[in-house]
Image (cartoon, rainbow, N blue to C red; front, side, top):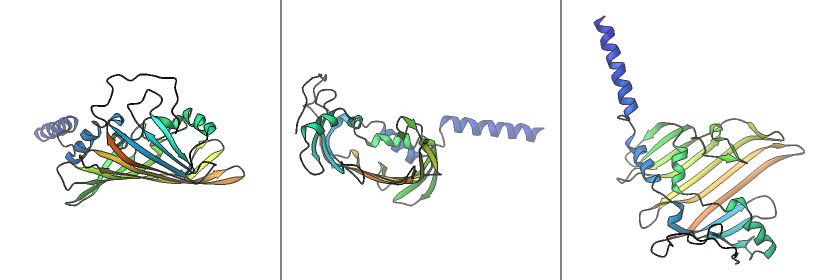
Length: 247
């Protein structure tokens, strides 16, 4: 009887510690706390997009959060040439012109099933069995539960930094009744600017699969360059405008 009571007390104590986060991983907690403080409105930047399909293989665009709502992106190049007026109008209506990705995306990735794989004095690597909800959307559908990955964290300073996220499609699936994805891999890389702010530098994705009358071999990459802080010149309230920017 006494043994059972002690066992019950210890299990209860274990549950209290678990629920309170007393055994939470300090490295992950530090990463999450910093990621939660990041905003896409803090920096101007250049984003370079390349892929291996379609008529548009390259785009270079500038993001400025101080511009009016809906006009934050300015297209600079299409296929390494100034964009035509026709393509500029198409770009201005594109859904790809939302706020750029930031280090804050880490919160989604680490909100899934995460466990420690290895740890040294310089870095820790975590296995992500399933990404957190909302990490990856495909044509409006959340496919995060089909993706696993690893997070590599630099721990050489008192501010641990996720330097790389590696993603992988766990098993073949059909995102659309005409399309089947067989394999997929992705890499997202981050680093700190000179002022200490963590930023995204690269996103790459490779997908293979099948569809009627052919196969899928798609590769895309986003590079993020020329970060410039937005400080005293940021307006307190954004204004909207019907005028459109042109390169």
